[in-house]
Amino acid sequence: MPNIPVPQADPRAGFLAQRSRIDIAIIQVIESGSYILGQQVQGFEQEFSAFVGVRHGIGVASGTDALVLALRGIEVGPEDYVATVSHTAVATVAAIELAGAKPLLIDIDPKTHTMDPAALTAALERPPGRVVAVIPVHLYGQPADLDAIAAITAQAGAVLIEDAAQSHGALHGARVTGSVGRIGCFSFYPTKNLAALGDGGLVVTNDDTLADHMRALRQYGWRERYVSEFPGFNSRLDELQAAILRVRLTRLEAENQHRREIAIAYDGGLQGLPLALPIRQANTSPVFHQYVVRSAKRDQLQRALRLRGIGTNIHYPVPVHLQPAYRGRIALGDGGLPESERAAKEVLSLPMFPQLTDEQIGRVISGVHGAVAEVG
Ligand SMILES: *Cc1c(COP(=O)(O)O)cnc(C)c1O
Image 1 (cartoon, rainbow, N blue to C red):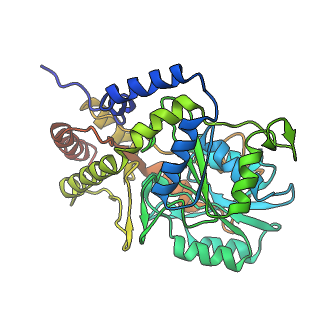
Image 2 (spheres, rainbow, N blue to C red):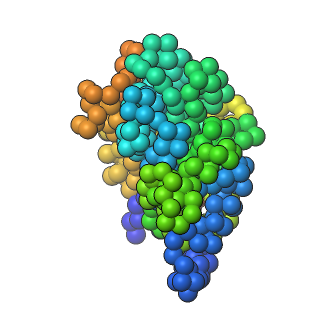
């Protein structure tokens, strides 16, 4: 019997693993009669911010909105720049423009695939204008170099905002990513490490005044119902998603641990091949949102793996600054973004989700060996 292909991701498997509790949570929301900003959202905001180790959590409709709310919360203006990376989900850069500011894109360190502190320093020495915030992205669940980036950001008088949409539970030293900057932003898109059954997002902060401001901004500038103290917008996490996320949060640490074990199995099984494997940084604990290898023959490798029944994906095939929407009109760090452009041609995400079985992991490893031998 031919083997069923190994998918690159399987969001459905995560829900099925907790199916009975999720069914009950959904029914409870239906019966509660409260569907927006009720007890479930409040409960999830408290439980998730406690998990991250911060005082305040504010649920919103998506990860993109979490970034927009953070930037509007610190009141970025139309002449202000916000530094981030180009090797990321387009959402990170889109959010800066949606909040009314200008992106300044910084190159990555090719070993970690996160913001290169040296490139950030260089960009801040001759910025195109006032840089008010810096948003490192903990891409693939690997914490960015937060010690260096936080110091450079503080030196420049800018605000550090973490894009933690791929790093729920990843540790930088003893701190959970999202708790180091002034604001941390999360997404609960169905493929993320903590996943809703639809869209969802959240911002965290320890700053009481900022939390109060962002909480009002999220809903028409209301502190009191029907009284808009300033112009706000509407981006709310709903009760149904919050109830589902509360169930899923109880298994997040176990699922992250399973991802780490899969990564260790891949590290061992793929050693010695002509592939760059994810590096391990001292004093951090990644959560392997993705397990990403690099190869100069990436496209051939992907094809050979597909023929062997191994699903892969590319995160991301075109850096944001080369996308039609942004090309030629976005500020880039000095010298352009050669490492971001090279990464986009070489990265390949292998199957990674907590429900992968040992048999599937074994098939991925032997499939990669066969594919590498074939493409040479
Ligand atoms: C998923 C993601 C986002 C956006 O989240 P949405 O919930 O899809 O809006 C932002 N940044 C990164 C790095 C992401 O992976």
